[in-house]
Amino acid sequence: MRELFGKTAFVTGGASGIGLALGRAFAEAGMKVMLADIEAGALAAAVTQLRDLGLDVCGIACDVADPASVEHTGKASFERFGNVHILCNNAGVAAAGGIDDISLDNWRWVLDVNLMGVVHGIHTFLPHIRAHGEGGHIVNTASMAGMNSGLGFSPYSASKFAVVNISEGLAARLKPLGIGVTVLCPGFVRTRINESGRNRPERYGPARIPDPASPAGVLRARIAELTRSGLDPSDVAAQVISAIQDDELYVFTHFGPRWRAELEERFGAILAAMDKRQPAGGHDQGSGSDY
Ligand SMILES: NC(=O)c1ccc[n+]([C@@H]2O[C@H](COP(=O)([O-])OP(=O)(O)OC[C@H]3O[C@@H](n4cnc5c(N)ncnc54)[C@H](O)[C@@H]3O)[C@@H](O)[C@H]2O)c1
Image 1 (cartoon, helix red, strand yellow):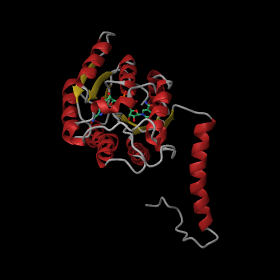
Image 2: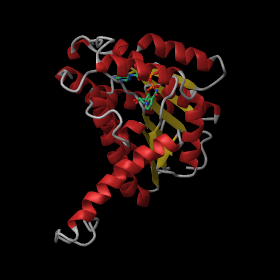
Image 3: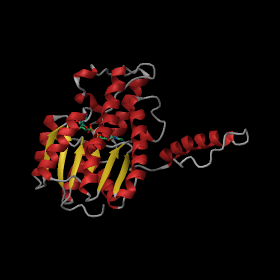
Image 4: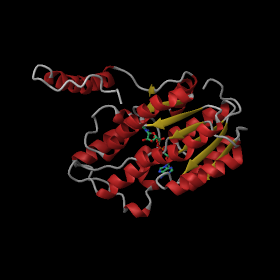
């Protein structure tokens, strides 16, 4: 979607970090922007901050884990700004836990927000974008954690792997309809992601902070440190805008030998395991994408 001016964007998790930077960048490009977020105080502050810059921005309370809430905020956005052209399914949370100590509440919370939140966004907005026929673009925020196996067995990685897969499948299906899809896979970005517990609804039980001396506690501190020294969210937003305009599926905000080595190791192991079947008489079913 080359022309952004005059169009409308809906951004979940828009009160903070990457979502707020996306909202600002869209508005500075001449778009109308609806920021949707569960944290009412931060949302009001974000809207004031952007309006003070003369930008056309609104905010609406939304829990992406709740399909009715996403449906409701979608309708409110259509009433306020008319057709939506860019949907950013960006809201996300992280929860800590050791490999044998991840509560089921943590699994549910992280998957409800990071995975079902994306599904709910697509469910509400895709029929609308298809129906208005003015073109559109869906941006799903995943993570490098959805590409490598660095975090291992964790609800966060599981949710982000799913978001990558959903985006890849959606991109192929929406291309003929003129609707673009981008999956955003950042490394560490300077945001409040490590304080996700601030927005944890009571229904998921209390957040448990791991003992700082435990492996989960050590990992948590290391990730907090990497996030503090991470990329500025405005740099991420600039890369997303150019991916929308150039219709690019993947955005990798970080590069370098460490990230590359992790991907090579994973994909190399997968291909090696597949190749191993060949001489052993693995079943040849031709192209796997003929369905
Ligand atoms: N910061 C990083 O290093 C990093 C790296 C890779 C991916 N990400 C992803 O970027 C996205 C944005 O996170 P961020 O880093 O800007 O963190 P952040 O905490 O600064 O912003 C996340 C926003 O999502 C909102 N939110 C949380 N639960 C919600 C819900 N149920 N409904 C609606 N809004 C909700 C929060 O209130 C907050 O405003 C997330 O999907 C995160 O997983 C972040």
